[in-house]
Image (cartoon, rainbow, N blue to C red):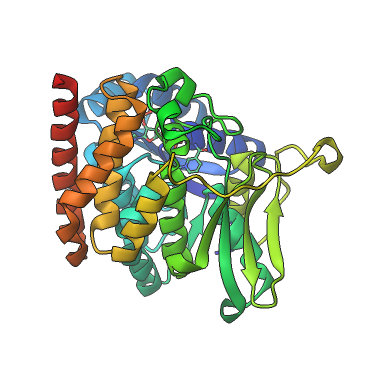
Length: 389
Ligand code: NDP
C-alpha cells in the first residue's frame, strides 16, 4: 500500500482523533469507521458529519445510546471492547489509526495486525506493554507499523538518512514539561490546573500529566526501543524547551540528523498516512528566523524519577513495562481526581514496580494482561491508603 485514502479511526473524540478528522477533511481522506469510549455526543456529531459505515463505543451503555441516536441512519454501531475489534475485522479499509488512550489501545492494535491492515500508531501504551509481541506479530503478518508520536515520527524520518548498521544512537527530545527547572520538593504539591498547562503541546489530559512527570518521555524510550529494535543504552533523552527539534539520530560518523517543524501533530499524522511519500501538509511553515534560540539540557531524574524508572523497566523487560504503564494510569487518574498529589504519582508507581519485580520473568501476552490487572489492583490499594492518611 502506498497511500491510505480510507482509514479506520480509533479514539476519534480525543486530541489525536479530532486532529486526524481535521486533516482528513482537508485532504479528502475517507474515514469509513470510527470509535470512542463514552463521549456519545461528539461521536454522534462526527458520525453525522463524516457518515462512516460503522462506529463503535467501547463502553456498552454508550454504544446502546449511540445506536438509538443513529437509528435514522444506516450506520452500524458496535459495542464493547470486542465490538471495536469486530468493527476492524469487518471493515474493508486497509489502514487503522489507533489513537485510543491507555492500555485499551492494545487489543485493537493487535486486531488490526491480525487482519493485515497497516497500523498507524499513536497509542504508545500498546508498544510499552507488549512491544516485542506487537512488532513480531506485525513482521509475521507483513504489516507496517507507522509511528504517529512526534518523537518517533521524527526518528523514523531521520532513519531515512542511513542504514541500520550505521546508527550509533537515537536522541529523543523532551520539552521538560511545565515544571522544568524545579526541585522534587517544589513540584510535590502542584495542582492539576498547573500540571495541565503544557508549554508547547496541546494534548489529552493523561499524556499532559505524563509529560509533567517525564513518564511520557520514559514511555517514549520504551516505544522507540521496540519500534526501531534499539537497546535502551543506545537511546538518549535531552530536554529541548522549544519543541522544534522532535528527535534525532546520531550515526557512526558522528553526523546527527534531526527533524524540525512547528509542534503540530497533524504533520506526524500526515506523514504516517502518506508514507512512503511526503505529501503536502496542512500545518504552518517553520519560521527559523522567528526563533531566537534553541536550548538543550540534561533531564533532571532526581526531581522527575520516572524517566530513570522507565529505562530500568526496559532493561529488566518481561511484563515490567506493562506494570509501569498500569500503575501510571491508576496514579494519574487519581491525581486528576485530586485524590493524590503530584509527588505521590511517582511514589505510587515506584512502590508497585518494586513490589511486582518478579514479573520481569513473564513475557507472554496472557502474562502481560494479567500483570496489567495485578498492577492496577495494587496501585488502587496504594492510592486508597494515601487517601485514608
Ligand atoms: P485523549 O484522552 O484526548 O483521547 C482518547 C481517545 O481514546 C478518546 O477518543 C476516548 O474516547 C478513547 N478511549 C479512552 N478510553 C478508551 C477505552 N477504554 N476504549 C476505547 N477507547 C477509549 O488522548 P490523546 O488523543 O491525547 O492520546 C491518544 C493516544 O495517543 C495516547 O496513547 C497518547 O499517549 C498518544 N499520543 C498523543 C499525543 C497528543 O498530542 N495528544 C502525542 C503523541 C502520542 P472518549 O472521548 O469517549 O473517552
